[in-house]
Length: 511
Image (cartoon, rainbow, N blue to C red):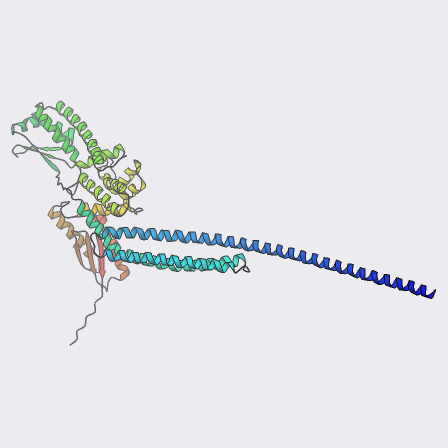
């Protein structure tokens, strides 16, 4: 019995041990499964975090590359502008090489500068690639920090290189500007040389015999009075053999009187009614000729689109003179000079030629005005819808208004070249000498002025002042006052430059 009980107890114990072993095995399997699940989940989360980090890195890298591309584009544009400017200067130097042997050295310098630019560009590209690699290894940087670092480095590099290139270009331009300007002006003057005409305020009408003088005078002078009333010209019939003098300040009226007299003498019928008829027809025919002259001038100069009234004014220039220089020939010459100079400077030669032709239209206006001819001409040009560049050039060619375009100084210079050179215009010797004396006496009338000299045919006035009486600040005021008095009190062609010279001299003798 006891053995049976012991066997039962042993069986129970064995069963319990077996169960415990089974349970332990199950727990170990469960633990292993949980660990494997946890490792799997951890691996998935690790991969997910790595993917997120990689996506963030790729996003930062893309944004950095966009920023770098934008900076590269701006740098490329800046370099392109620099290259275009250098290319333009290179072309200019190549053109001047035909007349200047030193241009070859300048061309070599430009090539070296181009190679330096290419070298700097290669250095920038190397720096760019280096910084891209650095950014790839700096994923721990924030987006703003990376952008700021790259931006600062690129800006400093580009700023340094750009300032160096700009300084070199500006220095070279300063060296060549004066020489190039002189060559352009000299070549322009050499290209255009036109004939100069001298006109008087009187015309001589030749007749076959002195018997015609009586017929022209008429009974009790009625024919000559009718002719003078119809034309506004003074007709002088004196003892001059086979000639009648026509005197009038207006060349158009003088020409009408000359042509009318020619037709009356040829026809033989001379009486007041016939005189009025012939004068009216001649005036009409001359007006048509004036318009035709204006059109022909515009065609010769290849100027199109002028208002008909401006064309008529251009034709009237044929019968107007300024200091003995025919106004139409002067205007044509200025137009050609302006076109030549504008072409040399890379400006629009057609606009320059148009402004040169119209710069003196204020002198032939039908309006009675107290305005200077330049301002009046500008207002006429504006009235007839000329462009702003042309209007400003007309109004500013005697410095009455401020110059706002590059065409304006060209017209001013060409007007001076055409009108101010020796032989272009004439003055009576006595009036010229008197004008020079008046200039010097006007300057000498001021207190503190020691000497005054009129130079360059009265176009420059140099005033020597005593340093004890006139201070530096007073010298500028004195120059302005003299210029204002000359404008108000004197009549002169062109411009007068006033230069006040003040100096202090200390002298000592070593014995």
